[in-house]
Image: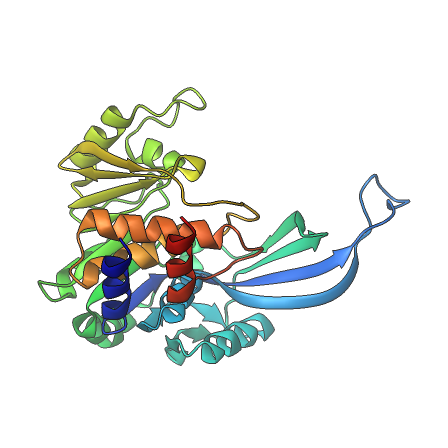
Length: 326
């Protein structure tokens, strides 16, 4: 396994990937608590430090950059303090981001997590309605189209915040080169319609929604029915369903295939694990790797990331170390 994975990781550095999606700032407030508030039965956290990192689609881009991949990012943020913090993070990570998408009339999407003794106490979300984050029509034609033509693969990172719409997906599919892979990590909702993407990577709950089975009994995942319905409705060329502690399910031609057991040894934080999966899957497939090899590599990468606290990334060296440890 090791020589093959090393070869794929080396080839990844030669591909160029465009990420289109909902970008956000992930802020962490770190501290400790040793008493309850006199105002309510909640802990009082004494904040000792604050950190910021790229979130949402920006975290997908960060995962790619951490693997040495050339990455360009398209999303929308505000010309506010949070937007400046996010662009500083992206610049520090050497992720290409078009300043035309910083809007004066918009608030940057922010997820603030309060961390106490290495555990997440709560999360505070700040965002506006999705319509405010839609890509401007003139940007699609004048700026996005050339970026699509230059990419070896495109990742549509959908958090249902406004950037990834049915029209955006169709535009991307119409303007990429014939050999360019288009991957979608979806957030299912009634108004989102798509068909024929090259790679679709829902998690368990999202797969049930895409199949129209979201009323299924908790804990039940009828894999054959789910995969068949997704194929009929959305016709993805490749489908990989992430199953959390159960690993991931690799599907072909509307049928469940190999289920890869999770590579995680210790789980601290699952936030951002889906971003890692679609980043590694897409990059590996863009090198010409098989779906089975790409999924195995993505599973190893996710196993590393969930062992870290906070929104995290993985390096090629960490993936190889995970293989050695196995």
